Image (cartoon, rainbow, N blue to C red; front, side, top):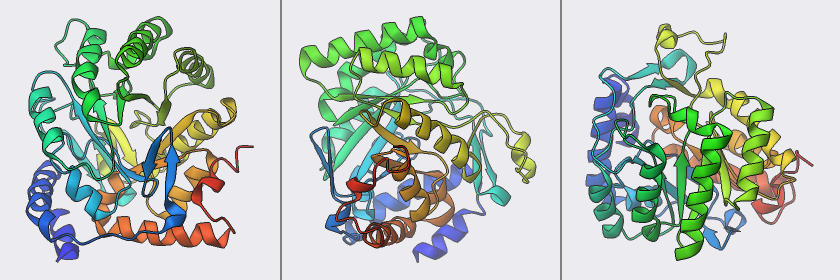
Length: 346
């Protein structure tokens, strides 16, 4: 049945398919069985215990509606959002485009979500049988993006294990300007003070895959200066690799999926080497199978997220990746996957 639904959804407009997936997952939640588990995939990081290192990236569960069923499907952690203070429609439709020939997606959604109050109600109602992250952003009409981050961080941090600061989406005008040194320093300083004063959620910074090593070096310095808990590498890309075949490659927006795997891995590798593996890194971008996930871990990621591959392959992909990942760990002679973190970045 799941395979049939996955195939059928591919023939629908992308946003319609996503909406139906959300509703179907809600309906199916009571009937979902336990997923694959193996102690070799258990991992403890920054005081948080993960059943496995595979997570769902932000963008799938924008309104925190599917936390419990996503854990049942098999994810070791769930990152919801991006959520903004006020409800927001986002950019005009159409704004999501499949690149079927490339196993990719281009989106210019623009932080469409139901707002902070609805989001928090859903967070409170969920059982949260695992690690939950919340991805936050500003309303596009806001006069002060930094203030938006501070307000929403205070609102959601007490209900989550970590908060991801999304300053890297290409789909909100001027958002990536927040990655410039002076503005980013103000934002990270203020957030770190909020975290430390109230013992709130850990802070993860989500960065783009399109910048220079000098730019990433600047980000690392600020992250370390203000003791930010980790970096998520990376968001979608504004680049268009020459290998793209699908006609939708000309669409404006952020590119995700297989074509940005090497780009994201390159950034991840640089961050891992530059920080001497002393900073928690979450790898995201282009992972389609256990080998891709394992490679990100060996490059320095402690955790790995996916989304686009799930849209093409369906929820059964999660168990397949976990089963194969456990085999890869054992094949390399490790008792636990944590032993493989960064072995190709030393």
